[in-house]
Length: 92
Picture 1 (tube, rainbow, N blue to C red):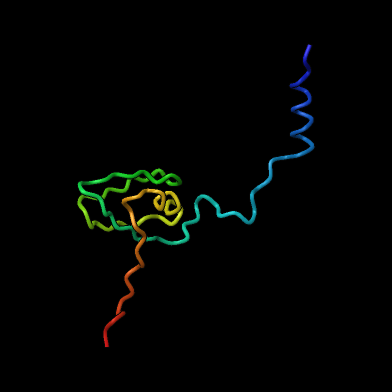
Picture 2 (cartoon, rainbow, N blue to C red; picture 1 turned 60 degrees about the horizontal axis):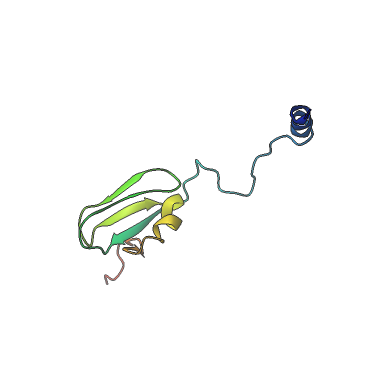
């Protein structure tokens, strides 16, 4: 007969769950990143981290994406990361 349950209890008492210090905490937003849609119609994408729905209504549409979702967005072929608008850039 297996006695796995008591081994599991002993293990969890010996090695309690730890926090992942050094990693970005899920509630921490490190900024927003702009993406431009270069497809032919419209596109909806769900952020793989936040679960937020991002809607690009037409070609050339720009959406501000939570930085935690940005890595997944770079894998979508019709989305392109664009630099954030810097106020006053290019004006003399």
